[in-house]
Length: 312
Image 1 (cartoon, helix red, strand yellow):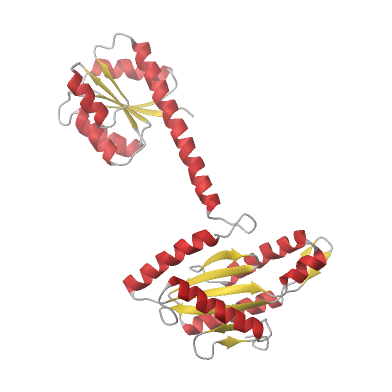
Image 2: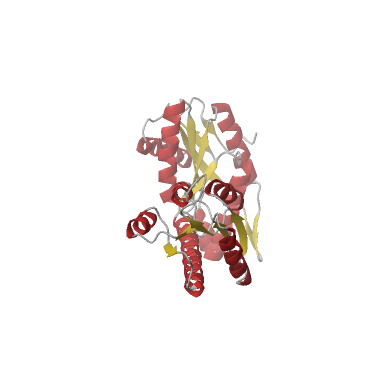
């Protein structure tokens, strides 16, 4: 699909000439006869490239250039002018113009080549930006489960603590660990174990609230950040989770098994007022659950114990 070009010039002959030439090259063309109209068209059509005269009534080309560049748009700008002084050219380039051409346009092919080059440059930049976004996303995702990874968890906890302190609300972190997961790998193989982990994370995601965020903490451990949640709500979610996991049969090819999980959690800021202490408290609660026989939940708040008999 060809790009969109906006031509801004108060000379109708120039508008007609450039429109005809660029349309014949397959570009989509919009025109404006002064800078203010040009900015309106820019906001309406979000063109890939603007060709603008400098000397125009109402709003000149330099003002158009400044306006476009302050919008953080990816639109490129080529300046057309009858004023060939070096100072004007430097000023345009300093404000972000890609190139500068003097009128009358004696060699149209040179302008057309510049248009092709700047649009190719824009395509490459957009492709690179897309690849960088993909790489950035991959760097914070766990490749097996697709969950956010430990690295992103650390940044998310920092952000959540700042929000909690600013708006005076609490949040809870819930650590979830698959019980005896080594036995699953030893008995059925690592492919089956990977399948169990992926399906387990789907069950957890399904039972958490839509506002909760789930991360792979490492190995067979997961961690959920549950913001603005009460103690009663935590207990309800935990009971749901434990029941759903306990009653699920994991089937892959001709193999199947059932598993349980142990959970531990802590509130910010009641149980800990720093990130490291919060994780430490939740981790300690998780190990108490394991020491108490697994398939249970432990945390710091009163009566924060849900075991295998609590099927609620």
